[in-house]
Length: 337
Ligand code: KG4
Image 1 (cartoon, helix red, strand yellow):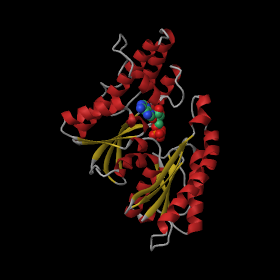
Image 2 (cartoon, protein in one colour):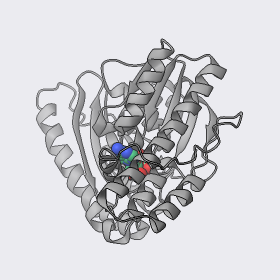
Image 3 (cartoon, rainbow, N blue to C red):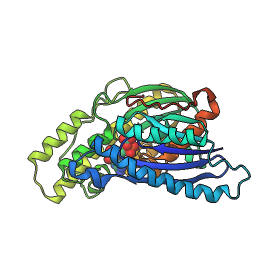
Image 4 (cartoon, protein in one colour):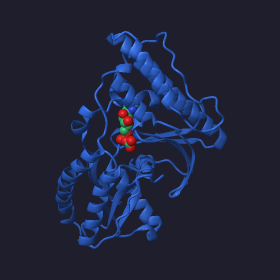
């Protein structure tokens, strides 16, 4: 079975082809950083417009690649299923991918399926040989979400806790902006923090004493921004602040994971979403899981941020399990959880 995946939920345009025999045949993501960087964040209208041009280009490229594969294939169908991101995300951006997916599905006379973007992130770790087995705990950390999810099996999840305000990736980006780092600032802040030294700064670890699995990062954001406004603007001092902020955010995530693992009795942790490429987070969570004799899985770096490979793969898993979910009508839900 071959699945064409389309991802346009925010500001990354991505197309991938997953084949259950050969793995990923095609996967390409184009970002829109150049469009949004001067605004310091994603402008929804511009994101949707950029998707239109970039998506057509990527679809054409992917079809060329497919034609090469199909020449050697007795089954002359180009693809068997189209999977597109149906939510959550920006409505205009989602509609571009959904319309493209459903149009191709009508003209090729094949089914298409709307995939949940967050579910895609969870299964991004399965795009590699070494896969986790169910059940497991998933820490989803991205620009729009911070969630701890009990994953029983495909399609069966329980959100144990989530952020009550800002998502951790968004806070990385906003703090980075205050430090005059260009959008998307999360990875740049982390680079700057490498030069940071242990200093007098000690930032709050929000909600680590509360007996639940929720997060709150807006207070840490305000605290950090106030420190930045009133402190020396030297490189070393800015790096020290970046380090103190990163340490606080990461320690909060690690302590919440530890609490959730203890309460659920699970011993496998799957970490996904854009922030999961953060090296300090990876190091600290690996340390935690080795102290608990548990297993930990991360997606490959290029599949941590938004990508169509995870959408194609999740579409494949879901269509295999629930044939009734597959439909040809356009469906998007910007607030789909
Ligand atoms: O998953 P993703 O591409 O988008 C959403 O679905 O939201 O995640 C993007 C987020 C951005 O906020 C970005 O700053 C953050 O992930 N991010 C990082 C790092 N790399 C990406 N945050 C901290 N450290 C990193 N190394």
